[in-house]
Length: 164
Image 1 (spheres, rainbow, N blue to C red):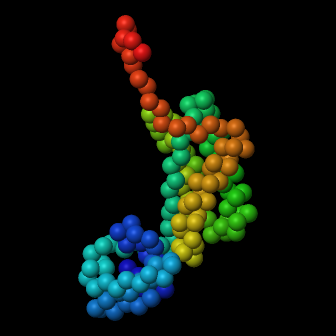
Image 2 (image 1 turned 60 degrees about the vertical axis):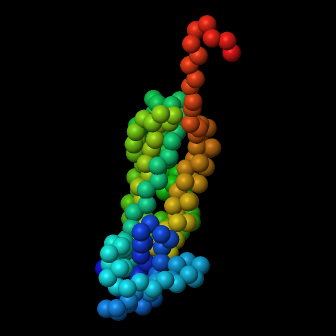
């Protein structure tokens, strides 16, 4: 499933670069330098995801119910254009194979959108940085458009006649 030099995700742990592999063992090094050696059978048993052959990032973001009238039309279009510009500005544009922003669901306290971005495998070492950037740029787009980012709401019902 991989070769020397590939970037893999193992059990949701930080991404690691394969530095050596044989029939007996696979050695990986994480960003920051931590090395781990797996028996090859154990490594394969963890179903490593090879990010070097392209990968997808998914970011879910909640917006205010004040945007209900435009959450399925202009909000996703505006957010997608904003993020596309940021990707190009930060030199990820050519490596972004596709970008979509869609309404996902009406949550308890927010209207949720999902940002889906597919990237070339060359960007695998930057996976977490890109993921954080997508969330950051979403906040920046909200600020630029005066869109409220809600916080979880709690409603307390007090029976009539109760003293508060």
